[in-house]
Length: 121
Image (tube, rainbow, N blue to C red; front, side, top):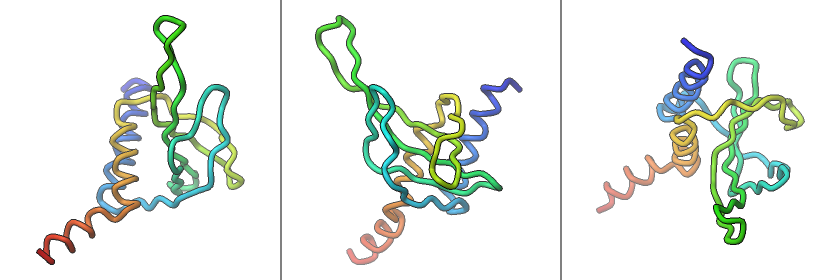
């Protein structure tokens, strides 16, 4: 298995554990913006083994013609230290959006809302 495949598998497993409620994510303060990038919405952190992992969505401006700019968004996954400083960023994987969606779904307790709302109907 290549390095890229292994990281894809790691992110897929993080998403699966999040979906099943086995991995808990906590809301953390704003991540300092990198040059040309801006955090969109909250950031979340979880302890996995002896590592802290932070995940957040960010956007940056891009242009295809150099005149008209538009935002693009992506998800950033990284190891951080206890002070919240970035130590190393995961390589981009197709599974990163699945993890991000699972974290956000759990953060708002969407499953509890569905269950309660449908029972009340």
